[in-house]
Length: 204
Image 1 (cartoon, rainbow, N blue to C red):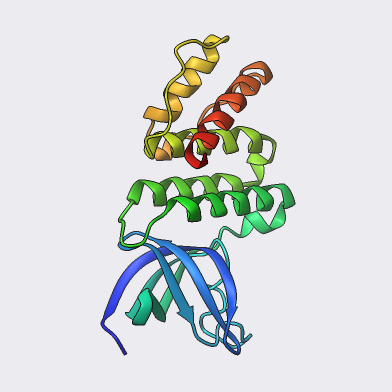
Image 2 (cartoon, helix red, strand yellow):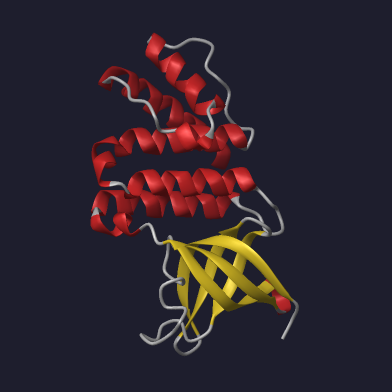
């Protein structure tokens, strides 16, 4: 058994590992992207059953092992973002966002901004009252992510004044107020094009 460490982490993906266990890939506040073996987590009686689900955010105690893989020793659930599972569109978008974060996150890289962006986005998507604003949420996430990662260039010209105001809010606001605005359909269409270009620039 290796040295024990503590962190807070959100599960971005889960896969079967061995017999009755799971291999989790999570984003943590202390160690960036981490691979975690959750032994026996597939059992209905496992104390890790809840915390080993995708999107679950928990306080964890891990044991460092070989090949950079940690073993889950203790965990206390902070937020399951259960609302994501009650809306298929929100669930689909959250899964897409999780895949994107996995591409961007790096091991042993303490990127607290990436973690906060992910958590605040999942919280927004999990609230029923935001069901009609998923398209905007996707664009806000993509623009802020690409900006924080150094890939976003603020457009010199836009068609609508509301677009410029929205982009300024997205790149400058605190994560707690990131989604606290709305736009017209015309502005959303323009923001969507800008967000797509920014997203593509990260992975081209």
